[in-house]
Image (cartoon, rainbow, N blue to C red):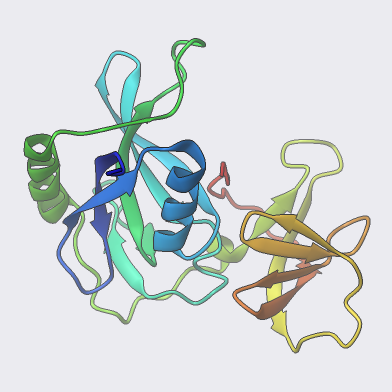
Amino acid sequence: MEENRMHAILIEPEKEPEILLLPTEGLKHEEAIRDVLEGNYGAIEFFKIQEGISLFILINDLSIVLGMKPNRRFPSPDEKHIIFGKAIFIAAYNGESADTEGTLDMPEKMCRIFIEQIKQNFSACDGSEKPDDEDKIYYDNKGQENEKAFYWQEIKKPVHPGRSIAAGRVNFYGQEDHEIMEINDRFFKKVTAGVKAKKIKCVK
């Protein structure tokens, strides 16, 4: 039986944007996105297509931690912000209606129009761009009194990391504060930071 697929747009470092076909079945859909982006991802609402539906940008939420290549810059006035690693542009319900959620297929013609807009407005990086220090900051308890800023520092694999807690493509170690993270067979330690910055919220 042929698998149902939906259209989205993929942008990769040093490549032109292209149409991406994703399976529509729930679990396969989520896993396919994680496969493409090489891990868990966060979503940024880019613009409203029509009432209740927006174009979202999906990005690996740990792309900077993993040292992924610079891809493209956001349009003005946000051109200082860079997409690192691969990104997927996808249509989805934007939460305006509590009765609708999830992603939506975009006709191929619409994808072609958006691809041309991406080429014109998201300038390609030359490969030398580096993330700002503030882009490396993450938060526990964001917006609360006990908010804690931190960054991930890569370490050697611990001899006895303890019992793991899975969160998508990431494994955390440490019962209380998840101070060790494993992703793609690499290990990182949580280090307290004194800098505050805005981060993409990981939603999947």
